[in-house]
Every structure is written in structure tokens, then in C-alpha cells.
Amino acid sequence: MNAYESLEAHFEKIADLGHIAAIMNWDESAMMPTGGGRARGRAMGTLSVLLHDLAVAPEVGSWIADCESLELTTWQRANVRVIQRGFHRAECLSSDFVRAQTEAVMASEQQWRMSRSRNDWQGMLPALKKVVSLTREESVLRAESTGLSPYDAMLDLYEPGVRSARIDTLFAPLKAELPSLVNAIIERQSAAPSLLPLGEIFDVGAQRSLGLKVMEHMGFDFDHGRLDTSHHPFCGGVPEDVRLTTRYDPKDFLTSLFAVIHETGHAMYEQGRPSAWLSQPVSEALSMGTHESQSLLMEMQACRSREFIAFVAPLMRNAFRATLDDPAWSDDNLYGHVTAVKKGFIRVDADEATYPLHVILRYELERALLEGTLEVEDLPAAWNEKMTDYLGLSTEGNFENGVMQDVHWPAGLIGYFPTYTLGAMMAAQLFAAAKRGNVELPQQLKGGDFSGLLQWLRTHVHGLGSSVSVDQLLEAATGDALTPDAFLNHLRTRYLG
Image 1 (cartoon, rainbow, N blue to C red):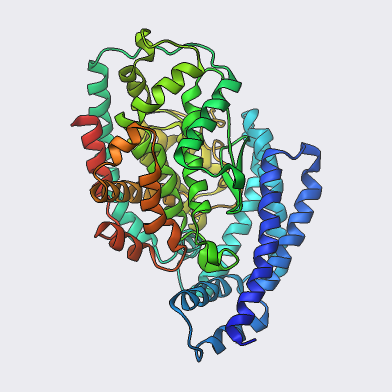
Image 2: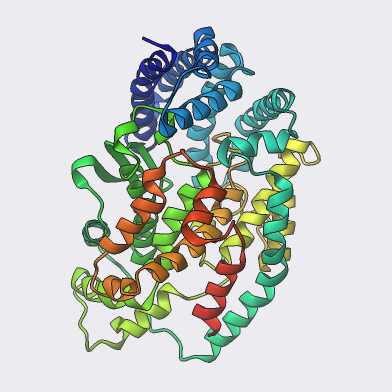
């Protein structure tokens, strides 16, 4: 075998072990009994070390260098480029560090599930401090290796090539405009007739059935994936076996339904990755911002449109035995519920207008955490201050719905949060381009037909894997690099137009 063929064979083995890790992670979050946590943490630590040692094996560096003299296809060359980036990212960490961090994160996530349900910040604090300490150590090691700042070195793991200076530039118009825009939307909605309540209790079995029907219409392949429940909705697994989860609230079926839609957007990205390259790094999702664009495009852009609500309203009425002559279950009232804007505590339940403020808050706090200007003990007070400034809500003493509401920091995912709003911007830009490319798309959604949208996304996003950069993808698909303009225009049109 030549050097490139050796690389491919090596990374096929890594992909097989990664498959095992992905299913074990899903199981830990969705199925594992609490008593299995310590043993699972050890097992995941061992598996993480195996994966790390394979990724940084000396021969990998040699094969990458030898590929320079080979005639490779465009996809092969892109695969080498992605492998090289991963090699340089990983070689700055020792096997001992990888094991320690994996075990700390597993323990922290398990503690988070218990502590959040009890509003127990003090119970969470030791585990979170350990994870943050290790993440700070990791950020310094990565900074020394890359020449980036510690925060940018972590951000680069989730959004390759993007720096905090660019995020500051992209977020500045949102931070400046959204507070007044949100107030204007709320004022307009307050002046409209009040929304009629949909009911008090919604059967969980009916909620699940409704979610499965919507997933089917969206194009999810149930031969290669499944829906389960967990503490926090997520999408995991592998392209051939995608595992997504939601959580159910008997008092609010819309929260679960749109969580299903959101995670299905993630899942269909995974199912649409380039099939010929699934064992290779070049097939992987381009960035977490790109991944979030696919979930938010489905959840916010497509499925909160009037057209889609006209389609799904009869399914909702049938699921909960409502009738069309009940004005609470009219298309207009249902559309009002799914586009209601209000200032709330919970990021995952937030509407699309307030959502970026939740993200900016977290971005600013996690950056301060890594830069050392904020300590873990001081997070609740800092959170409360920003929540009060940005959304006019106090979280003092309300840790469950404040600083403890997300799993990301307990899971060591510091540097991840900006990708949600980068994804929202990308989603607006991509959906606008998809509608320009297919003027029938709104009517297709009105009929519950996602095939046109899915085909467009397969061509312009999913099927590209990591063979291009985010800017290259956006410029080819939409004609522009990433900008907040399409997102802000979308909010003005939907809510104030």
C-alpha cells in the first residue's frame, strides 16, 4: 500500500472504534442505569486513549508527509487535509491527560443530572471545577501548539478557522439590535388577540407518535436511526445508526415536538453525509455551526412557517383528539403558539428572537472562564447579572433554570456555545437560498413534502462533508460569506412585517 492507502486503512479502524464510542455515549445518556456510571467512565477513558493513540501514531505523520508526492483526487487531498488538522490538534495532548479528562467529564455529566433536578449548585460545584480546570489546561496546551489564544484554540475544535474576533463582529449587530427588536415583537403580539390555550395535559404516547410522524415526513430514515428519551435532547450515534432523543412535558407538547424536529435536522445531516467516505474524516460534518444550521433550519425556518403549520395542524388535532371547529386548535392559533416571543429562562425552549441572547450570555461567560477572569464559584452571580441585563430576568438562587440548565460545561464543551447562533445565521442564509432555488418550496412544505428541501441540502451541505470550508460552502450555496443580515431580515419579516 502507498502512504494514502495506509492512511485510509488506519482511519477505517479509528472509525470502527469511534462507532463503538458513539453508541456507548448515547447509551450512557439515554439508557444506562445510574449505578453503571463509574464503570462506564473507566471504559470510556480506555476507549478514548485507544482512539487518541491511534490518531497520533508516529506513522500517521509520516504517511501525511509522504502523501505530498502522490497524485490524489480532490476528495483524497481533502481527506489528507482533514486528517492532518486532526493530527496536529491531538498530538499536543498526552494519553494520561485524555484518560483523566474523559473520566472527569463522564462523572461530571452524571453529577449534573442529579444536581440539576435538585437545584443543587453546591453539589455540582466540585465536579464542574475539575472539568473547568482540565479544560483550562487543555486550552493552554492547544494554544501553545497552535499559536492561538486559549479560547480560540478551543473554539477551533468546533468551528475550524473561526476566531473570537470574528464572532464578536458577527454578534455585535445582534447584541445591539435584538433587545429592542424583541421588545417591539412582544409589544405587537401583546396588542393582538390573546392566544387560546390548547389544554392542560397531553398524553406522552400521543406526543411520541406525533413526533415520529413528523420525522417521517421530514425524510428521516428509520432503517438507520431511532428516537428515544433523555434528560437533554441530543443527536448521537453514527450515520448508519443515528440516535436522537427528546424529553416530554405532559403540559406542553410543542416543546417536545420542536425538540424532535431540531434533532431530526441534525440526524438528517448525519444520514446525508457522503456515503463513499463514511469511514474517513473527510465525511464528517463540516463544523458544529454547520450542524446547528441544519437543526435550526428545520426547527425555526421551515417548521415554524405558516405553510408547515397548515400541514401539521391536522396531525396535531388528530393526536390530541381536538376538532377543527375548536378555535384553540385553528391553524392561526397554533401558528401564534409556535411563533410566540417571550423572555424565558431556558435556552432550549427559547423562541428564535431571544435565543441568540441566551447564546451570547454563555459565550461571554465561557470565554471569561477560560481566560481566568471568572471563576466557577462566581458563575451564578455573573449569569444572573447578564440574564438581567439581556432578558430582564433574575436567576438568583434558581440554579436549575440558570447556570445549571445546560450539560455543555459539565461535559467540557467550552467553546461550543457560539456555534448555535452561527448556525442560526447560516440557517437563515441557506433557507433563503433554497427558496430562491426552488420557488415551489413553501407550497411543498404546506403539503408536508420535504423532498425538495432535503435534496437541496444534500447537494449544498450534507454531501460535502468536510471537503470545503464553511465560507466556501456558504459562498457556493448562497453567494455570500457568513453574515447576520439574513437572520435579522428573517426576524423582521416574520414578526414585524
